[in-house]
Image (cartoon, rainbow, N blue to C red; front, side, top):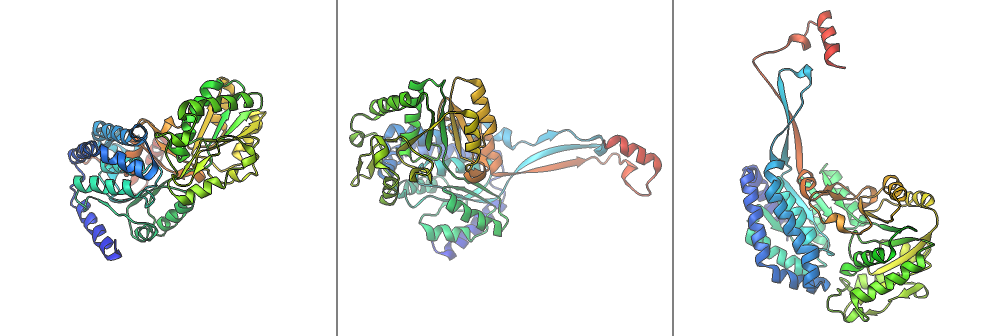
Amino acid sequence: MEPSQLDVLLENQKKYFESGITLPVKFRIEMLKKLYRTIRSHEAEINQALIHDLGKSKFEGFMCEIGLVLTEISYMIKHTARFAKPHRVPTPLAQFASVSFQQASPYGNVLIMSPWNYPFLLTLDPLVDAIAAGNTAIVKPSAYSPATGAIIQTILSECFPPEYVAVVTGGRKENAALLEKKFDFIFFTGGQTVGKEVLRHAAETLTPSVLELGGKSPCIIDSTAKIPLAAKRVVFGKYVNCGQTCVAPDYVLCHSSVKEAFLREVKKEIQKQFGDMPLQNPNYGKIVNEKHFDRILGLIHKEKVVHGGESNRQTLQIAPTVLSDVSWDDAVMQEEIFGPIMPVLEFDSVEALVSLLNSKQKPLAFYVFSEDKHNIRLLTEHCAFGGGCINDVVIHLATSEMGFGGVGESGMGSYHGKEGFDAFSHTKSIVDKKTWMDLPIRYQPYRPFYYKLLRIFLR
């Protein structure tokens, strides 16, 4: 899209929002229902797009993308009226006689920039929240998942006029052009490098933003963990979508007393879940492109591979791989892996581990497998992270009842459910002062008696 066309689109969306058509709750709910129906009618095409872009099976595509979007829409249809309703709060005695309330107000024209790893989920989920909050939106899918971007464009163009919701496709040129424009709110999901660029542009126009980034999310297996179950759940979370998941356990920190047992169970689980030849498993996906394929292969230290390591350049597949005897200096520990490699490191002291983890960048996710309440409390209370699980992985993002987001280097702000509605809204604080009386205490000339009353009110 040319800059002049983008200007026209933005102007039309601004006019559409200013007309007030998106404000009534009834309109928002009708639009959500329309989106729900349209997604259901295009499920087959969405599945095909996900297979083309990432090799996702029909089951995984529904479980991890389509189904979660439908759940978010259903949640918002049910709760938007309550979220949008003015919320009354107590009024200080000094403000007598008046009523105080808070009113959620849409930002206006929002920009949603999404990544390639969950291209349908991470585009439509924030859009659902934006629609529920009453905004117009321009959606920018990733160029690395073109088939999914195309079906998203088809769905949204069937549902909405472009002055309400529009899709802008393309790559870096289009991203740069969008960031040069003035939006009322920006929602970005992706890596830290691009996230910094987004925030830099947002700062120029003082545009509020939510950044959903990533990072090296640790998974701790302590000496009390139920090892077979831990291995089963970690293998699922690590290798789903070929490890291309922002909340996947990036690396495992295993207590030295159970490390060998954990490795044995991990190998068993990989065989159970993916078969003897994972690269021939039709339900095992692929790396998104050759650039990332080569980057991930470069992180595999062949001498430290204890399972997997096979790859197929023609299909862009890398088998579920486990590395042992990994050190913090290894290449695989210098960046977010975002692929099917599981480095396993050792630790001996939970207390020392807390200090070590807090010396690292704040991760998006944090996982603890333990039956020791003291260890669980120590790790979850004293370590900084966006969100996480105790005795499981990744599932914390699959609920509309809790916000999902990062902290520090892993992002800012959160969404899903009420948190998502709030993310795309500005909350106005309003005092409705009554006119049937007017206390004279605040007006000059000030009197000693009023000063005494003031000290009673304000304490």
